Image (cartoon, rainbow, N blue to C red):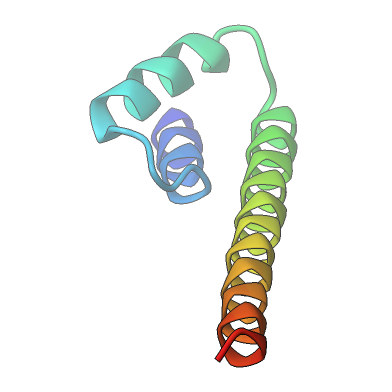
Length: 74
């Protein structure tokens, strides 16, 4: 069961160093249930996804604005 928890934590935490994930999971397994670990990591993944989408939207807005300015000033 412990191995499954560690692997699940690794799967749901993209973008972090694998060693850090495994160490963190090993520590958390002593104090948290499997369900708590899954919920926390899914929430973290959702937050990262939303912030990435917001960041991309901001970049697109800037590009559209730059294109508009370029068209209106030529």
